[in-house]
Image 1 (cartoon, rainbow, N blue to C red):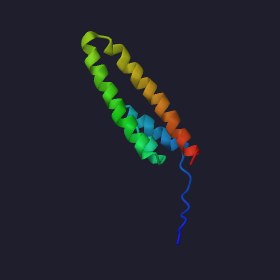
Image 2: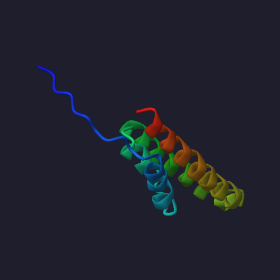
Image 3: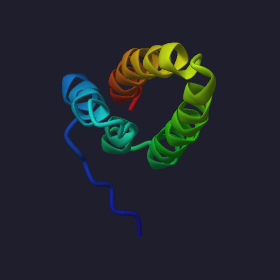
Length: 90
């Protein structure tokens, strides 16, 4: 016996906000989890932290002061857009 549950569609705007607002504090991936892509959300979260750690180490040779903010801005834009799009495909 199969039970089919109807879930209301997820909001792309909410998913984007759940990426961008915690992203201010360098926590990404929550919007993807909201959209139902928990694995993708965790990969983005821990992947960003790994990249942020490398950028922190690069600050000792000064290039990290450039690459760190660039990676943060790129992650903020890309992860918010992909989280919003993930809601449309479900």
